[in-house]
Length: 517
Figure 1: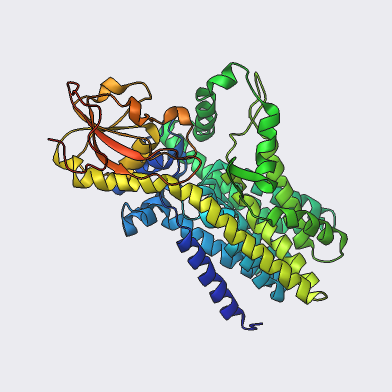
Figure 2: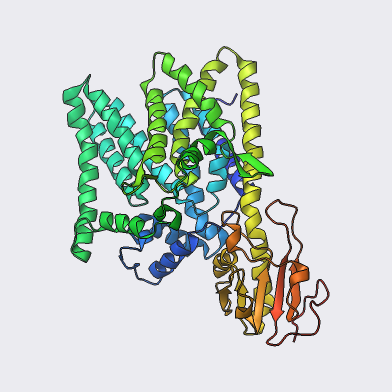
């Protein structure tokens, strides 16, 4: 085993880079366009308007970080995910440093290696998943806080508590979903007060005062701009009160299904029925026995804090009400919120494996190899499903640039394809319009793309497809990309030119690529 910790960390970071390069997805989440529009405004020297329904404008640090990535690498797949990708690598290093400093030096590489391979983070870190950044900042805040708590008697502890408070307010400037991390550290302070009330109250206060003063400064900024000290919080509430789904307004709430969504994400299979994968691999199947093992052993309270904080974060997202009336509805169910669970979970599992390794080396090494192999397989399957939705739309963007752009005619696509094309063909003077499943007449005199370029997270009702035998006579096939054998892509991507008047034939020969006129 390599004894030099610097070399250990370098090799782990190298493996993290290789995995994230191998399973790279790029641009591809539903709210990416909202962020990119604001990024463009920032790069042009303006800040997005602070309107009640402009939710992303209240995440200033996130917008500036995204703007920095685009400024450095352009409007490319890597440019828009660079900060997320880097945050994942930083968190890998933080896990290593955290365990080395607070738990056991020899356990550090076990924990960091698990984080580097964790499939949920591997794939999320190559998309615009802002929760990867949030997880990095909240975990860094915890680390600074716990290091300061261990050095309570030393003058430097005050500086570390202040740094922890600053990191927590930075997390707030990313997303209000930082709250469970703050709740977890507050519970730690309350527990510590029982044994060391005077010194804990005096030293921990530096963290909370830093956070509260910074929060007050943010609120005062909104007061100066909008005349309301609590403008951001009111806007957040107004946003969710406005965008209530029809099924919620009608009282059609499947609570059982909602409440199982997060547990199923952690322990069950995701994806389509014919293409399943474990989002987190076997991590949380090991987290449960590893937590029991750690809780029953005397010793390091940091591990116990991570176990409790992981449970606190999970319960927060599982039970926190988005609306208190007239019905109870859990917070918007997005599994990527659970990124915040990962640093603590991998440390608990990695530490347990390290302890067992001291007595049962061969067995534990076999478990580690099995776990890492499982992580790679699940990351590959998860990446396949994410990346598949990008392949056709990239092909379509190339065709738009090479052919349609020269005709000065519009292209009509379904909603998922339109969102992606507005990014991939942003520099091409082509009008990209949205077409619904039954709006064929809206595209006469232009092009229409059907059958592919769909994102798996969109419902099929939003995706336009037409059986070849049902194609209208006046649609002329100009381009086709063969479909892949995936359960969610039953047909090829096809581009038709739609004449103003129907032709006597239904379709041009398959594979016809040149412009029809």
